[in-house]
Amino acid sequence: MKVNKFYIGIILIIISFILSTYNFYLFFFTIPMYCIGSIFVIISPIKIIYKIFSIILPLALYIPANSLQLEIYKHLKRKEFIVPTNYSGPLRIIYEENCGEKLNEKNKTYQFPQDGILILSAKEDGGLNHHYFYMNKNGEKVEIPQVDLTENKKPIPSVSLIGFIEKNNTKYIDLYINNGSSVQYNFFGSNTKLDSLTTVKVNNCRKK
Image (cartoon, rainbow, N blue to C red; front, side, top):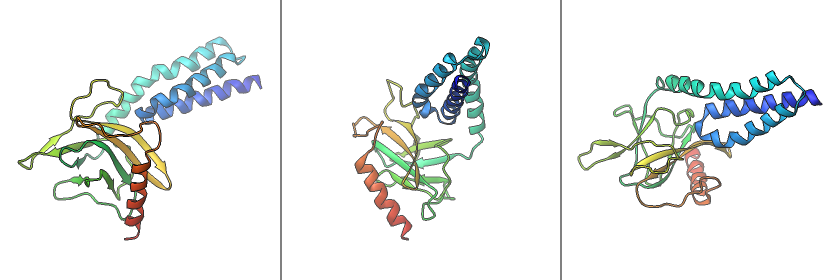
């Protein structure tokens, strides 16, 4: 059992490392898992050098792994999304629905509806290499800066990726547009109104 503590700790550390590098927005949720794993490693009877190596190595590899991941992501297909003019609040992109919207081959963009919920036929990509735009009065695209959700002083307007979610056989990512006006959104729990509208839209889409 004492040796098992080491293996339990290693498994928790590995899982937390994989999740945090797969999606940065899972980082804060993986910290407790990493800490618990480290505690199991520390209280195990394994030699001290192995304990130090097991705990420090993931920390040392985290930044290089994320840098490599970002370089790979740069080569993914660029996707552009048009957001309703002056829109502020949550956006939701739903993936892998056969009835969903396909890429507009003419201008290579997707168009968000007024309710901020976009259903796509494309496979889930974690919101990588996405670019978001408003349209100005001249019909020109104006890109919305993307910022980290945890950043204190966000430019206006700006867009932040909240994270990837899979629920009720539906895959989607949530984002938030900060355009000055405050729109209620629960960043750490369910959003009943948004979720209900999503269910209705997906069900109606699947009936087509």
